[in-house]
Image (cartoon, rainbow, N blue to C red; front, top):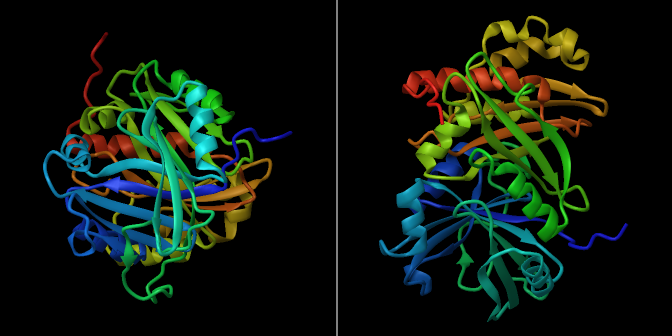
Length: 370
């Protein structure tokens, strides 16, 4: 079948933050990114400062507004540090924008091209959930360090403190109650995505709370966007807590892939980044549930790594604590050994771990009847 909306990869994920310099230092130290490019006052940018952070196929951009009225500054004030832009590299940005708009997407930035000594950089953007935008980026004909206005920053080679992260595996959104299917339709109708998996509140629930989730993937199966919404429960769910503190829908977490999760997590932990704690009892029958990891259960338990399997293989995953004061954005580290799923067997353990952190924050409170 022909993919009517071809996407090559996730080009970059841009976070709007309160202090781009400090954010860049954090991501470099905690995750081993190198600072590849910079845009700011010194390069002629009078409105924003941005640092481009890279590790193999992963590219993060952290941006701060230099005046309180700039959209990046308003975003950071309203939401805290968070994902504002999911950029998709496409073969033809003009076509992608026109196709998405024709099928119902609202424009966020019109198609345009920027030129410098390195060629022509073309892009456009549409609005997604909350204040998040999807940006279409066309790199054909541009060979600069990132985009016009950016200059190289630092050594081009991979730093010695690389932790082994390789690619963005998926990007998860939280939306309001009753809105999940709206955004499922949005990705299906505007960009040709299809529903890969569906988890109801029976699959993702605890004694206190629940959520529902659908996983959307692009036509080639490379780009995956799970979308969560809260479900009825005795107490406020993790999604409801996110919506309260983020101030609406947005990206809950970004999953980063590695080929050796034990080595990657060991290195990240050594840098002081905290992960969600996992009870010892989780590992009592892990070897029976996922036989492939039986010889390594002790090592997984030491690092708090979860394991699950499906018909295609198994996966290993772990989740950081939120990376800012608000209990919103966090990161997942995932290693896939054939499995294409999202750790359904770990949902209950993960949900309970997040609920324990909610309780520590005083946010695991009785749900209010609507």
